[in-house]
Length: 561
Image (cartoon, rainbow, N blue to C red; front, side):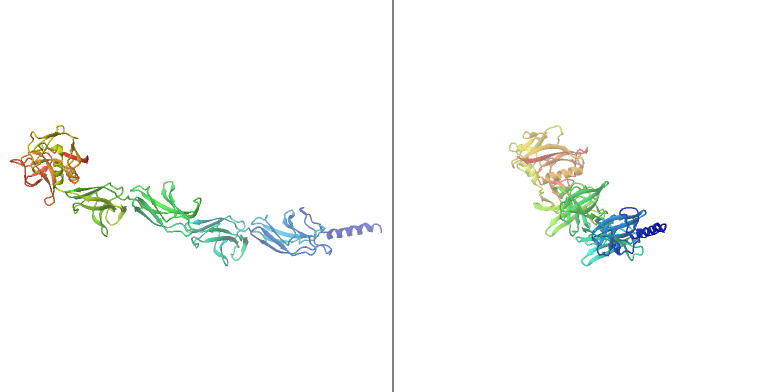
């Protein structure tokens, strides 16, 4: 009988060992199986395990008499405690995306006595909610980027928020998406969610706050054109843009030109004949950040500067306009400002143009514009102000001025013009005040003057004597024209083809009918010339220059006395 007592005690202890709800909190041992005892707290029934934006969510039913709950997940070595809570839910932020977890929950009473638990637990394959790392304005829409999520078998679905909820944009298996449906100036909030492989369900939650941005489209270049003074870059206004920054492309990248709040900019740093590519980007009001992308292709232009007329000379043939050559220009078109705008005068490939229809003592305004080689399109802008000049050419004015130079008059007969001279010798000038073309041979009344001599004129000007040589007959003709236009006398060499003699005459005008210069010639056969001036190459058969080709001439520079 005694021998049977230890056996009964052993059997009783074995039964009691299964009834005690032993649970190794934090220990590797798993909890004991649920006992049939009714004085212990029952195992909470887990109603939900799900993925949230913050982590894995476990929810269970409340247990009467429970003061708190302890949540566990299973590891290879047993149950691992996650946390305690007095609520019926817990979000575990330590879950790793792509991992599968088994969870269970145990209730504790106010005395700290633990109850039973579900030894099987609830299983969840946790997939984290994608977090948008960047939302930026791209060249043709909004570009969203997020980090890859482990366990994202079916890819991702992207949304933007509307007043009625989240609106689907599109799906992708990558980690970025370009949305081309955004409107410039609008503010958007975006989020991303992981899809199942069949794309019919979701594997993750999503960021309910999302990523917010204001989309600004890149400025669209409307025109880049050659302007008076530089290149004008113009673009369409961008809704929501506070400022714009303009660039031109170099070999090393985009070079900043300048900023503006408007929709155009004039760049004065361009070099004529060079080709440039331009682009524009939106700036924040403080200019510390960009608020849009930019057109990476840009808009290109070969810049041709607007020609600038530098001189307008009244010549016997008309108003002669000159300007500097423009790099890259093939042709030029000359204009006269009329009552209704600019009127075309003619085209040229050179850098000068003579307008034959100018009238004496009439003021005009001219401008020049570059043309393509075929003359069908303009390649530059033009000087909108133009160049103003008065055409002032009178045939007798230079001769009259010569008569007013007091240093050339002595005695009753005045002085005379030498029929020959050398560059080194003094110049002997003669003038008879009793006849505008009555020249006499050198005599006692002659005035001896040399190069750079300054003569006081009775007209309030000072006349300096210049002795120079022209490079060619054409150059000498241009020099004569300028002297006549300036109201200054000019003494030129002429060669008589009949007598083979060379002597000097005074150019006094231009005969438009004959197309020849008029001269006052003291070397008229038979005595002084008292008749009207005669043209070169008419009945006198004379040509410009000496017989040996020398084109030495005497001119006068007039200045204020």
